[in-house]
Image 1: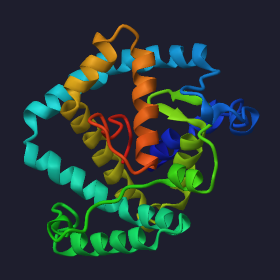
Image 2: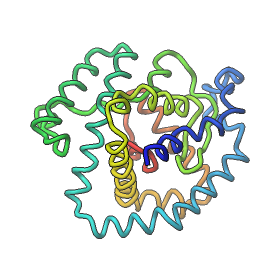
Image 3: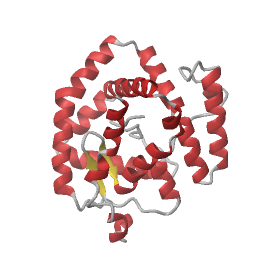
Image 4: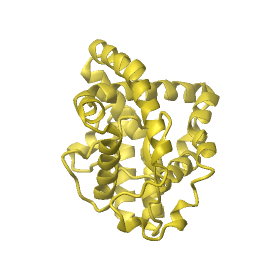
Length: 248
């Protein structure tokens, strides 16, 4: 199972071989609302992802949401967020954000102990809130442009910068080196269940975005890019939600 998890994360390396240069080949990309030179291929991947969602993810998430109590789904999401804090700490340090790095360590210690391995969030109750980040944001802090928009099989919408960031995050995540193969298998299972929980939670949004819009590809692309850019600017929008397809 650990090997399956490794393959599922590293697969985009092969898919991106021809597009990684995009960060440097279009200097005006950041001035454009949307830079999508691979739209034809992206649309094919989008159609595949929609088919998987319709045939597999949506039905399974409905069953999962109907059977599993909301309290359990909440605690599972909290636990996985807590397990992501060491990686967030590394990225805050790389971004030179000492305050956020300090808050992240405080959250991790409090929620891992008083919060019973992260199932609960006592840190938020005293005003120490989650400050999620990733290596894609670290690259942005270092001045790297977002590059071309791309849609990845099963993993969903991304950009060249965010995809590189996702792969680097997997490599630098301290948790990756602390777990045994058996523990990594449990973590993989928990992430799959959390994915189903997110799909259930965001069902109404995804229904509108993917199945009721005139052009679901364009709607998802715009939503993803706008929310990413707002997040980097420290802003929020009413649609500023987690990517329901992301493994966290």
